[in-house]
Length: 224
Image (tube, rainbow, N blue to C red; front, side):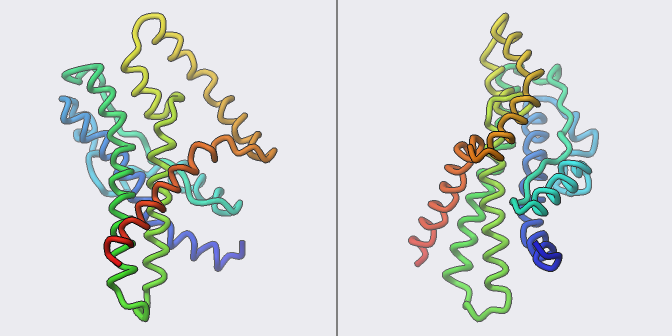
């Protein structure tokens, strides 16, 4: 990818990417507050200001490497602090605090689908930034649905693992938490299989992209 195209792709995907990871973390912090834990708020993380959530590796380096290798922008923000001891209902609180991030991504993704349909059907095509806005919204749709779905994978430390752990107890919970030791190896195996042409992760994330596309088509049908 030449440098000019690279910069253009970064500029188009950056708004949707930042919105996805910032709202994701904000949702975790907000839901924690609902259940009685104000740790995120007291630490200045219950905000939609991207500067408060930037993780050098996940927000800058990893996404740029992905784009430079021809992939799409993908990454993460600095996790908001949650003190589970303060949650009014421990099990229920853990589940909903964890689920809040993916839910936020699906909401933003759906809103992006609707906005895409509105722009595509109501804004004149000769508008100077017509194609650029649609492409930015397209990135927002893909990133949010992929990020939300990816985080539902029940592997530590992803949100899905905490949601599942909230239903476990005793020996079953201990064994499941031990799985965290193997998570890096599991993801390395998935990456290795991808290089061998076996897109394991793609089988999980492709349906998420298709849902975004179907929703967009549905809104285009309603507004067309």
